[in-house]
Each structure stands twice: as C-alpha cells, then as structure tokens.
Length: 254
Image (tube, rainbow, N blue to C red):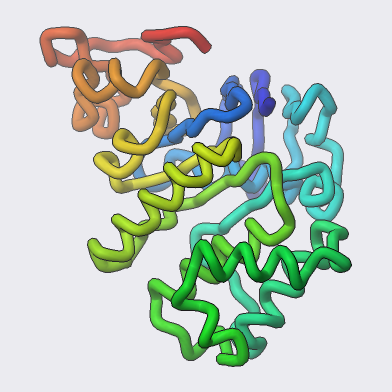
C-alpha cells in the first residue's frame, strides 16, 4: 500500500532521512521504532507532504505522492495523527471533527461518520460542545485520532499516541489499534513505548540516525532484537542477544 524507496529528506539544510526504504502492506500494522531524534516524525511528515523529499520516492496505492501538497495527501486516503496532537484548541470537539471531514472532502457524510467516531470514543460524545483545550490529555489524544479517522482514511499514521498518557488510556489506544486492524485499516505506528508497539504490530522497523538499521516480523523482533544496543549504537541484536553491527538488516520479508 505504502512504499518509500531511498527517501532522503533535509530540514534546515541538514540531512534527516538518509535513504529510507520502507513498506506498509495493506491490512497490517507496521511499527516504526527508534530513539529520540532518529527522524521518525520527519518520516511521517514527509509522507504527509509537509517536508519534500530531496531524492527517492514515496508511493501510495501505486501513485507517487512525494510531490503532492498535504491536502492532496489527505484526499488520497492518508490520515495523520501528529506527535503533539495539533488540535484546534479554541474550537469544540465537534468543530475539530468537522475540520477533519473538510480535509478529506467527505463533508456530506459527517453525521454518519461522527456517530461511528463516538462509538470508538464514547467519552467524547457528551463533550461534543466542549472546547478542545479544556479536555484532559487522554481525551485530547482521543480527539486527535478521531479527527484523522472521521475522513475514513485507508492508511492511518499515529505518531507516539501513548506519549504522556496514563496506563489505562494507553491500554485503550492499544485495543483501538487492534480493532481498527480487524476492520481492515492499515496503520503505521511510531512509538517510544516498545511493549505497546510489539504487542499491536505485525512488522517492525527501527530507525536510527535517519537510516533503517533493522526490520522484520514483530515476533522475531520480540524474541531476538536487543533494543538497547540498537538505540544506543545502531547495532542489531543477534539471536543470542549479543550486539552485532549492521545497517538495514532484514530478518523477514519486506
């Protein structure tokens, strides 16, 4: 569904992504892990059309999207929940959801879509008229995800959805990811919470210093990778748990 090929992205004339190749097959949850500053948020922003690729390509459903502006990327079927939520803080919950529908071009379907969203997030239903900036942190994260979902994306990108939230809310987000996958939604998940990512994803990439260091099926990652070694030195864990060195090491298809 989504394919990055040797994508290179600069910010402020500094290279951030250094030739990243990554695949997100339809119907799967793919996690992207890595230390702070590795380039994970930049990668999602490049997919969304916020940052241009200096070289390489990004394709979605067989169509190149690395030359599209963000609005066109949304209309193509990609929903993006940014790291800092980026809600319209002075607007109500309902108005934030309406903005999500406007971006996707599906305004006529708003009322039906809103009912489904409130089924996903029952806590938001009685707060439909509440100003977004007055919600709790967990409710704000729910609203950020809801705003992306209400446009019925084919691919949902989540940038650290568990950050700063209570364990009960984090568990709920994990359950939602599994439910959305069962319903056929494809998800690209960026997370610092490694257990959450490994519990909910099918395939895992680790990005270190702007490059993919290792990737493979999540069951392999769970049992064989040394994440401390990967994060601290960019080296891959060997099957016996001792660190080894390498870049873009595949331990599975993809």
